[in-house]
Amino acid sequence: MSHPSAELQTTIVGALTGDLALTKLLGGPKVFDHVPEKASFPYLTLGRTAVIDWSTGTEDGAEHILTLHVWAKGGSKQETYEIMNTISERLNDATLPLETHRLVNLQLQFAEARQEADSPTYHGIMRFRAVTEPLAS
Image (cartoon, rainbow, N blue to C red; front, side, top):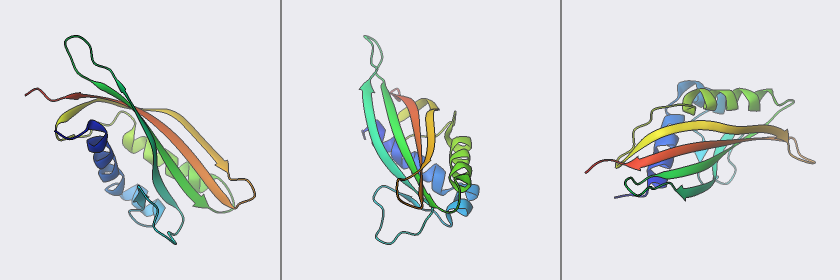
């Protein structure tokens, strides 16, 4: 059985790279775990993930806190906001398939857009909370 966080990341990357509106805004399926050298803006990176055991005496489960980062350059935050909105529309309350687990819920908890200090780069930060449980054997 694979780790639910790995399944969740794979499914989220697939959902985002398969979203035509997001791919158009990014100029391609630019969702990275590790940013390639000389990647062109805008793009999306996978950030920190934290997992908390949510098991009870009778059921197994896990809470996942996932961070996504939007990176853009331009004259305003508008591009960053558009990308963040498209990500939110695609992932918030989404029903995404996992291989050996069930996604109970996936919700946006926090979003921030800012210009990086002394840089023309805009940085969007989105934090999602997901709950998973193993599929019944």
